[in-house]
Length: 270
Image 1 (cartoon, rainbow, N blue to C red):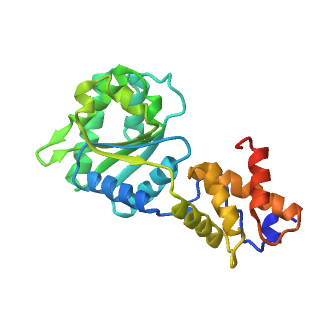
Image 2: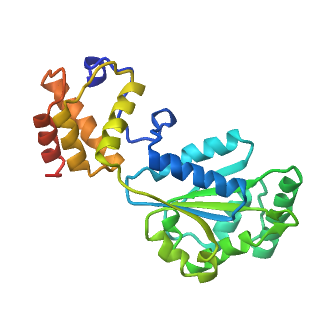
Image 3: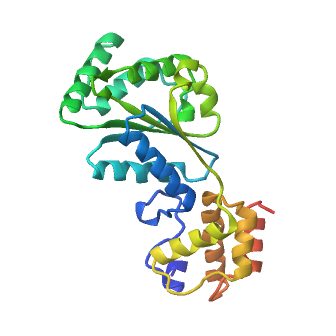
């Protein structure tokens, strides 16, 4: 028996994997979603979402992707997993994501194919947006130049392609490698850590989604979780998960401040 059974939960409430149903629409997340959606609807071209590690950028990118697709926007998500990608790889990936695979390694031919695909979608009154998660991994000037070049693709109606970049704060430094590109940032959002009240509401929300029908943390425990997590969602999840496991092992019906302190000590947070 795991702690889910002991605490009568239907599923794991503090998983590290992104799960849409656990999304918590905090005031700052709601504001960021509204601004980024506006950027797409008005075809601003380039928008940014910046946040430190663990603040929920990836979760928000998935939420936005689902929302855009449900609104009939031609939206797709690219996750950058390392910093050694080339501008040619990037262009070919964009073409592939737009369902226009190009065998040629000639950049002009690739961009031309992308342009014709975008015109086709534009003719169907489709807005097109590419979301890029971990965009701080795009660290070369030639990559910035390719993004700027793609943003130059327009019809008489306006821009054919929009980008929304999600990344760590240093992402802006790489964008500034091409000053002309950085000047095109039309919408900029920043995700901060949660405050104490929002941290508590975040925890309660995730427990409710997991089927919780009663408090599982004392008020003191909640305050300690905020204190040691500093309001960073990823750290909140880690502390809560370990605290519930410890509570289960001790057969405690409710997690108190001491359990949280012990867990935070084990996690090296004290």
